[in-house]
Amino acid sequence: MPVDYEDRADFEDAERGFIAALSPAIIKTEAGKVIWDGDAYDFLDGECPPSANPSLWRQGQLANKQGLFEVAEGIYQVRNLDLSNMTIVEGDTGVIVIDPLISAETAAAALGLYRAHRGDRPVTGLIYTHSHGDHFGGARGVVPHGHAPVPIIAPSGFLEHAVSENVYAGTAMSRRAAYMYGANLPKGPDAQIGCGLGMTTSTGTITLIPPTVDITHTGQEETVDGVHIVFQLTPGTEAPSEMNFLFPERRALCMAENVTHNMHNILTLRGALVRDSRIWARYLDEAIGMFADKIDVSFASHHWPVWGREGFVSLLAGQRDMYAYLHDQTLRMLNSGLTGPEIAEVMELPEALDSRWANRGYYGSVSHNVKAIYQRYMGWFDGNPAHLWEHPPVEQARRYVADYGGIDALIGKAKAYAESGDLRFAATLLNHAIFAEPGNAVAKELLASVYDTLGHGAENGPWRNFYLSGALELRKGVVHTEIDTSNPEMAMALTVEMLIDSMAVRVNGPRAAETGFTMDWKVAGEGETVRLTLSNGALTHRTATADAPHHGPADLTLSLTKEQLLGVLTGKGLDGVGVEGDPAVLATLAGLLDTADIDFAIVTP
Image (cartoon, rainbow, N blue to C red; front, side, top):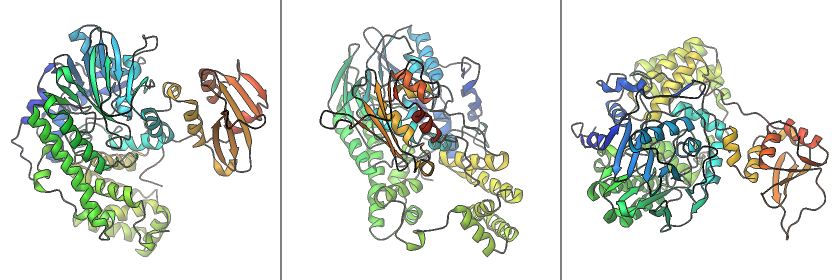
C-alpha cells in the first residue's frame, strides 16, 4: 500500500483544540437504555491485531477521538458522541447548533458537554447541513418542545429528501444500515471497529423539526444571532440537498459532508439515490475558488478539521480529482462496452491520489463506487439478454445445487475454493447452498467463517460490518434492529402530502385493486382541501385549486388538526374530528395498509 504510516499529521489535527471528553462516554435514554457507548472502543488504543486491516484500524483510532474541541474563535465541535459531529457557533446572545446528531439523547449530551465548559448559553439557531438522518435526528435534544422559536436553516429540498430516505424507504434503509454500521455487532478487535466515517450510529429518539429558512442559491447570506453566514448550495453531491457555508468574520468554513477524511460513497450500501460524482467534483472546485483565500480553518460534519490554505486546497483538490477520475474513467470504459462489475475489477486510482490518506476507501470504495456510477448512467441492466430475466435467488440456488450434484457436493466444492484462497467464489457457492436449503447448518457455519475472513481483511468499514453482520445473522438468526424512523416526532414534521405518500407506499396493491373511494382531508392551517383517491390499487392525492376544484363530494370528509390527523392514522379514532360521509372508508383504507418488517432476513431467504 502506498500510504505512509509514519505520517502523523492527521493525529495532530484530530487532537488540536481539545478541551475535555465526556466521561464515562455512555449515554442513556430516560428509561435507562444505553444508546451510545463510546467507552466500548477503548481497545483501539492498542496495536492492530491480525483480525483488522491496519489502515482501517488507523482510521478507527482517529475517528475515536472524543470530546469538545475548539476549532476557531467562538466555534467548537463535539466529536464522537454519535456517528457525526455537532458544531456550536457562539453568537451575540446564544449559540447556533450545526447538525444535531442522530438522537435527541446524544445531542443533549453533546450540548451539555459544551455548556459545562463554555457556559449555559441558549440555542438561538439551528442549521442542517444536509438531508441525512445523522445531521438532523437529534434536533429535539437541542431545541426541545417549549423552546423559544429559533431560525432553522437548511438547503432547498431538505424536507423532501429527508422524508424520501427516512420515511418512504426508511424501513429497508434502517435494516441495511444496521449491517452497514455494525449496529448489532459486539465492539472488539475481531468484531466492529467503526465504519470509516465514525464509530457507529446511536439508537435513541430520532426527531425532526422542519426548516424555517431555505437556502436556495449560492451566495445567499443570512445573519443569525449576529453571526454572518455565506452559503454555497451543492445539490446532488454527498446528499441530494446539501450546502457548505462560510463564517467570514471568523475565517472558518463548514464543508458539510462534501469533504471528509475518506473516500465517500457514490451509492451508500444502506441504499439511497445515486450521487453525481461529476457535479461533486465541480462543487469542490467551486469551493476552492470561493473560499481558499478567505479561511484559516475548514471543518466538516465528520472527522477533524484542516487548518491553513495549503491544507484546505490539498484536501479538496485531491478529492475533486478522485471523484472526477472515478466518474470519467467509468464512462470511458462503459462506452467501450465494459459493465459495472468489469470496470470495478480493473479500476485503480493513480498513485498520487491513492496514496492520500483522505482518499482511502474506508467508507466508500473504488469497487462499489464504480458500480454506482455505472448504475447512474446505465441502470441495473448490463445489456446482456442472459441477465434480462434471470431467476430470483432461491430458484437460482436450487439449480446450482442440482447442477453441482446435490447440497453436499456444492458445499464440498465451496470448501475447496475457500481453502485455495478464492473466498469470493466460495461465498457465492455457499450463498446458493443456503438459499436452496436455509436450514443447512454446515453451509451456514462455513459461509459465516468465510465472511469472518473477508471482513477481517477489509479496509472499508461498511464492507467489514456487512461481512461480520452477515456472519452474525447466519449463526444467531435475525437480530432486532434498534433504529426506528417511524416515531411521532418524525411524523409531525411531514407535510400532509408527505403523510399521504408515506401511506401510499404501504397500500397492498393486489388486495386494493378491486376497491375504490375518495376521501377529503381539511387540515386546519394547511390551506386547501386535499383529496385522496384509491383506484386500481393506487392511492393518489390532489389539492383543490380555483382552476382545478374537486368535483362532487367525497365518500368521506375529515375536518381536523394535524395532531388529530396523526392520531387518526395511528388508530386513535375520530374523537373531536369533523366527519361527513361514511366513516367505514377509513377502516377500509387501514385494512389495506401493510406493516413494514424492520427485521427482514438478509443472508437467508
